Length: 486
Image (cartoon, rainbow, N blue to C red; front, side, top):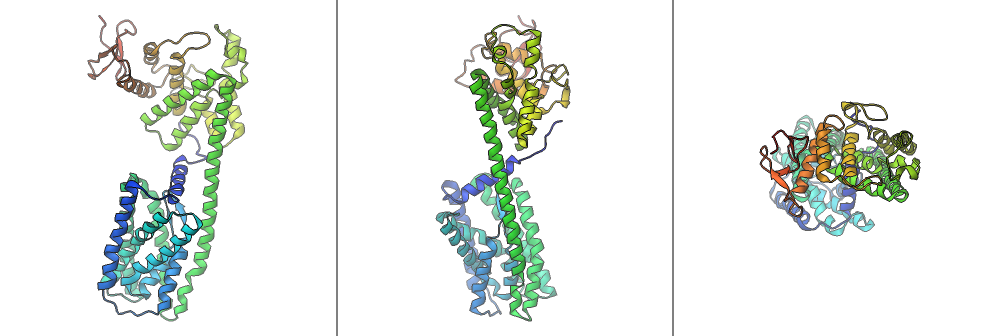
């Protein structure tokens, strides 16, 4: 009950959107400086290597051009993975390492990637300034293998050459992982741990394609035309890459549709009843703060946002005269109001997908930790965590705002109610997180903190001066502090 099926992975959506948007924009500030520095590293290694390393190989001029064009074509076959893309360049790089003088391989790769970058600049898919540093930065992956092959004396494509290739591919992975991690961390503060998944996929694809490129290199010892053997596989990979991109396009469109529908429903709720709509948006803000405090994952955080926004959507089915009744509700009227969670689930289930998951959580937003809530009498951890978050934030906001049937209880009284009902109505961990957030808000310079006392437990001026439960006070950091008043 603590999780829901992920119809759309919000982390994937965020990474895809950020990456696709970024490549069309010119790098600025820290990102520009980092990329220029890394590109300079390529030239600092590749140019001396090409000028100073020895070679016993001699290749026809057209092979240099063919490999550059092949690199350009292979680089256009992109499998989008996380914040980057896996490209089948091993089909070209490996034969190149055994055919051309290894010392010039990085520069040939640079030429191919420059051709690919020029094409993307022409189509508007890549900014000119980004392309200028993208080609040398990306070409760094070829430096490690070239150094290994040069150091090994440029072996032939045979058994020994295969062993050297294994070392060359390992060097490629080491350089690629180092450069990618350093660039993403320095330019965008992306943790290296977040890159492990995408890099793992990239390295797996390269490791599978490298032997196929080696087979072409072995066959080319007999007939140079064998270097064309990888072309049918590259065409097949291009088809798969296109299908993957189409699927990811659908994911982005679906995500936008879900969020758009959710916010449209939120607007409908607000148009139907201004207080309910405004209340829901305030609950969203507070619920997201609690979700962050509890370190919820990206998917659960998205569920928290949409559930908080739509937790009262079922009230569209409740007569307005009951919602806005200035006095207490009768038992019959209360029973009608209590159906709004079921009605909300029913409405969102009809939309389907992610909002159906949200609907199942909306149904549980009035369950109580002790099992006395509605509509299903869930208790404890049977209640979805997101529902527990929204329940507590909903209650706090309701207590601190004016309602048709009563005035605001005030902040201190609302906090006291949260503490008093911790472990009965509200999940304890959620209350603790909410109290910590409210305590930080009270301690902000702009807040009126004159009524706060120093807490003997944590030392902070975070204790309400009004007594709670006769002989105790509430600390906004510690919760209920068991010290006598007076």
